[in-house]
Length: 296
Image (cartoon, rainbow, N blue to C red; front, side, top):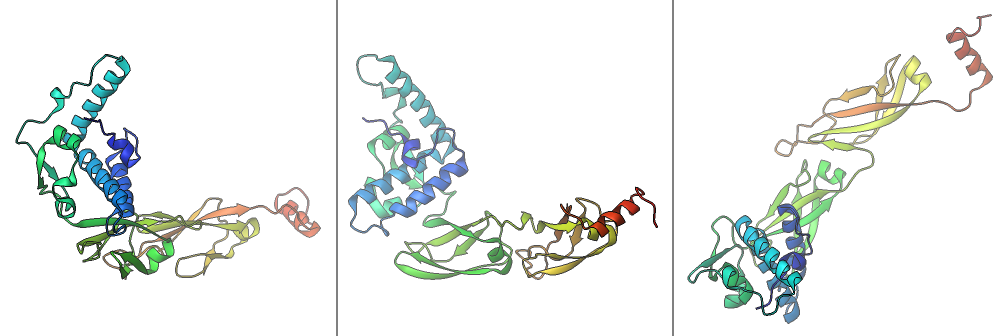
């Protein structure tokens, strides 16, 4: 029996987190799913390998057993001992059934798992009760402005074109359910990722930004233009504003996901700019203000 490197199949390291394993699986599963590769036997075999690797590594108990086997197998390879690897201590007892998620039996029947997997974890198959069958996840990246206003996306799934509405206020990691949107007719869950916006930093439902302010406006007061996701506005600057001072603009942040009429706040940090060149009049006035010269 040949050893299967499930980490290599998913393209992750042996110290990969559960989230990293899940992300790698979803990406590969979408790429090699039979609905996307009809009559492609190589893609079908790759899809079965990917699913099998995920079944082994997504379950903490199975992963722990597999890691122990992997260490033992590596030690045997390095030892150079004659004869084959002793599989007897790793073979699951007869009658052991394997729990799995998804609908692999519907797709492949008894061919869903390799002899290696069945030998180590058990033959047969039954669905794991903790995970719903026929549920798919697909990562989707949107901009911060789309998360602020809400967005309409067009997706291809199982030969169908889907129009999906992304609600205002979604965060990175939010999931949007598309009922019946999966390739096999099950539910599709869009996992939202937000691309960086150079103007803003998001903290929950609040936003942070920075504006440049010349030293004269900071000293004397005035106005400065501030960007918001709903358009630009004028911020009144009081005299004596300090470097790095932060102004809070209530209700100018992100909409709340469950209550889009309510919004977080926008925090504006002042970045003072010092002019490199002064006119003679400006230099004289500043020297007088600093007490370096006498007022005529």
